[in-house]
Image 1: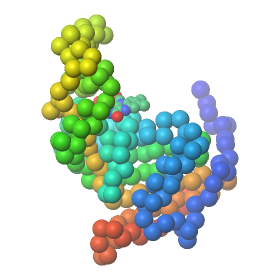
Image 2: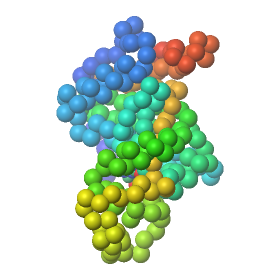
Image 3: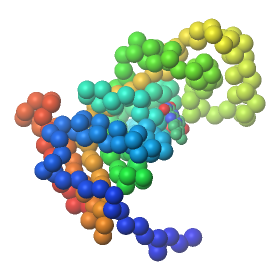
Image 4: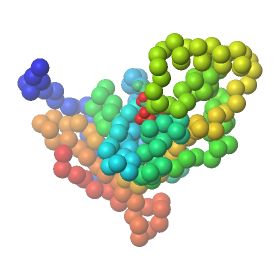
Length: 217
Ligand SMILES: Cc1cc2nc3c(=O)[nH]c(=O)nc-3n(C[C@H](O)[C@H](O)[C@H](O)COP(=O)(O)O)c2cc1C
């Protein structure tokens, strides 16, 4: 298959270095609100790239669950392939692509487990079946003989923890926060003259001060 003649012009917005807010968190909030207003499909889905000690990058989708004052939070199994990568190398990058708005956001920084109490509070808010599912998928990314084995484990756990009975929070499950150290906002423009504005922390001016740069597209 050859896709080399497929072209699209991006013309839905502009990004101007002079008028972006001083804090990238404000722009991130604004763009996130717009995805919701414009009914972007899966606005919280983000590609998460990790790289363990083998130096081989891995990428997969996870769901953004919170923007804090310092970074972004998602939840997963700590013993999964990504969890092992993170234990070996606590740096990660995530990517959002919202094609409806012709926008891309890249965020990178240090990644660390969040407080266990906060993870437990979130786990307890999840639907009962998702809670049971987290116990079934242990270790996430491990091999399973077939689907029946998974379904039998699910059924057995449904019996152990019937609907309306609390499901304990697994120790192997919880949130990670990526502290935003570098964030790039990309707005598609015509003629491949896209807007790219990157924010990095201004190390000389404290943690809440940011430098912006425009990058060539
Ligand atoms: C739309 C979508 C949302 C997902 N959300 C999550 C999530 O929030 N947490 C998670 O652990 N996996 C999520 N997954 C599954 C991951 O992409 C991946 O298959 C799983 O986490 C195992 O990844 P790993 O083997 O690299 O650790 C999601 C997948 C899709 C397609």
